[in-house]
Structure formats: C-alpha cells, structure tokens
Amino acid sequence: MKVIPVGIWGGYPKANGATSSFLIEHDRFHCLVDCGSGVLASLQNYVPLEKLNAVVISHYHADHIADIGSLQYSRLINYYLGKPSTVLPIYAHDRDEEHFAQLSHKEQTIGVAIQETDIVHIGPFEVSFCETIHPVYCLAMKFKVDGRSVTLTADTEWSDKLVKFASGTDLLISEANLYEEHLGKAPGHMAGSEAGRLAKMTGAKRLVLTHLPLHGNPEDILDAAKGVYEGHAELAVVGKEYEV
Ligand code: ZN
Image 1 (cartoon, helix red, strand yellow):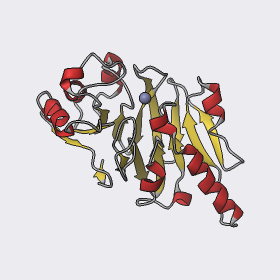
Image 2 (cartoon, protein in one colour):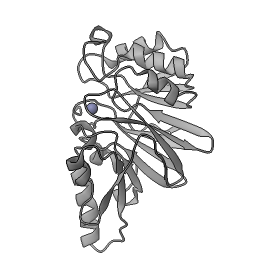
Image 3 (cartoon, helix red, strand yellow):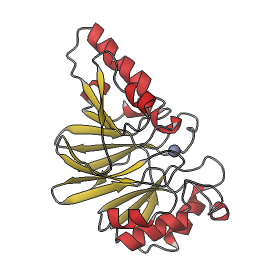
Image 4 (cartoon, protein in one colour):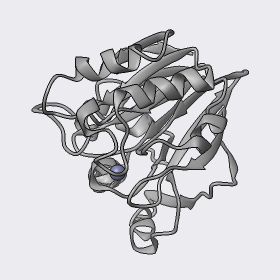
C-alpha cells in the first residue's frame, strides 16, 4: 500500500497547508484518514475528489473534520452536473450523535458507525481501532493489506494500550504535538520522545511524525524521537509517497 501525507499540522494549518491527514491507497482504492482544515485543497493534488472511495475520521475535533462539509458539497455539485457519483462512506464512531449525524448528507455521503472492537473491511484494507487518551473520544487505527500494516495513532497522550495495538507495525504514523518542555503539561498529546518510545516499544519498522505544532522548530521534536528510537524516523512530508 501507499501512504501520502495530505497535511501535517495540529490545531490549524500553516499558510497554504493542511491539518494532519493521510491518503492511504492500494489497488486504486483511495481512503482518506481525517479531513480537517485545508485538507480538501491539498487532497486534490493527489487524487480527484470524485475518485475518493472512503473516509475514516478519528474524532470530532475541528482540525480533523473541518473540511467534511466542503467534501460533501464537492460530491453534491458533481451530482448536479450529472457526473457519475457514488455514495461516499465516512467511517467514524457514533458516541457523539450530533457530529455523527452530520456525516450523512443528501445521499452523497453516509456516516458508517465504527466501534473500537470492530474489524472493518474498507476496500482492500482490514482496519482495526484502539481508543486513545484525548479530551474527546478518539480512535487510533491500523490498516492492513497483504500482510503489511500502517498504524496511525490519531490524537493521544502516552497510552500503554497503543503499544500492544501497534505492535510490529511496518509504518507508525504518530502524533507528536509537543516539545519536550511541554511533556506531561498538555493533556491529550505526545512529545517527540514519547512518539520515539512508542516506535521503539512496538518494534515499528519506520516512524513518521505528524500533528506538528506551528510554533517553534518541529525538527527539535524529531530529534527528541530519534534520541529514543533507533529506526528510521522523519517528519511527515506532504505529498511524499511512503510505500509499505
Ligand atoms: Zn483532537
């Protein structure tokens, strides 16, 4: 499978950027993970919007869902133009009924409820989930195909549960929203050293850091991760193709 970062920022995007989001592809099936601010503009560089097959949402914070409405309008406008359109499934948990209901729009998109215990088949992918530690209910996810896996932590502070969940993954895409001086002081997020520890304890073959802060120099976060994890680690690069 191929993983392409669509956006890398946490909270809000840098000028002309997008918040943390990933396109995961295999056999011409295109699945978007999270759809926050700036994602729709960036996504079109990598796949025509009408070719998107599925969306998975980790949680309902604005930096993960802000562009869902625009995505729905893009489907609706295509439909009005008479272009072939299929209903786009948007997978997300339904513990927040109001937000979940908004995922279904005029028969262009439909919300599909997922639970932590589910193993869901999305196109060629087998996808499983793990609750993270975040101010709102949030699911990490693991995409598997052909014996390979990519695990995305979504938003979380350090969680022992994630170590088991991500064990042996080929590519760990970890949030790393904090500089070391903020470790333990900002609930719901990890510092670079914690992302590095997660990669080390899971035996991940590769580590990519995302959900980066706009202030400071994110290279410092990468250095903190590399201080713990000896494998290959890098900051996510928008548009780069990671083969897994
Ligand atoms: Zn969040």
